[in-house]
Length: 415
Image 1: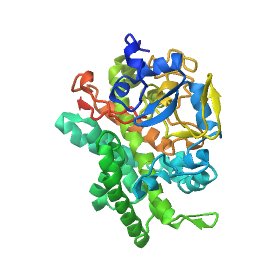
Image 2 (image 1 turned 60 degrees about the vertical axis):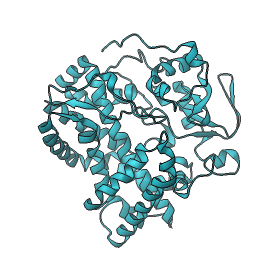
Image 3 (image 1 turned 90 degrees about the vertical axis):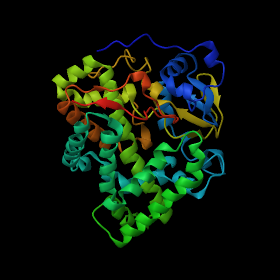
Image 4 (image 1 turned 135 degrees about the vertical axis):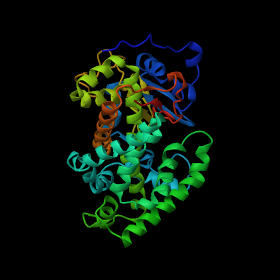
């Protein structure tokens, strides 16, 4: 185990204003904010960018929000009418809002049943050899360069290639496919948000519809063909549901993995004793990945939840229809659940973290993300005993996207 440096704390000046998990100060200092929320304000009326929301931080309370039927994902259900989103949005955004990620049972279960087989552990085993082959191919190229951005050269191409092949995107469509994914992952903060919502997403939806039309004319043994042909209780998917599910497959099968691999490498490099222990015993890899998910997982919050009735928690009443965000990143450092939560321990047990959420919306891509990360780390560490950061850790920039802990790049020196 490795002791961490003295913990950063917030000043009275920093906490006198509304905490906003979408601003840069929060994103750069989230652990200090989490400690404050866990101990001083477990249910806090703050903001997520421009959206007022109740922030829930303690482990048991996050579980409640994730599993209690009084909290739902479909805003219209909680408010008794109106739209799924709190303000009018273009049709492309509404399509994303129709995803099962923002839906509740029984509709959620109907849609999830159509895609879950592609992400079961048994299904994932079938593509392990392909992932291992891919990691070696990518490192053959990267190692020849010496110093690289590990995200762009390694962490990103692994899940991008895998999900492209699983969905059945033709190889010559790859540039447009990757552009569509980047719209979903890089354009959701700052001023670029407006361009994303009102232009880029429309282009992505057009691409998805074109891809669906292509797969209808050229069916194959892939997920998208299966969805097109699928029937659940005699009911086929609508055209809009197909588009929404393609968006979901991209997010579930790609986005989390990119940043889990990146965060894993950085965390291990920051904890050399744990890294040495892992190198000496690679059987600890599954446990190490679980601890990384707890300690530095990329998912720090879920999609918004909504209260279907007035709910009191720690003396705070969350009114019916109001937005609630369970802060998984805070829950994973809750001392009520984890002994020495700020110590990184690759042999930690038990480790019931919330890195992939919980309840009916438990991350669909979790088995795939775990498998790809384990193989990516194993290949990288075995081939590069002298792996190190190529810049000072303070130069790494955390991306300004609420609910995530992710970096814009990870320069490393291989060898």
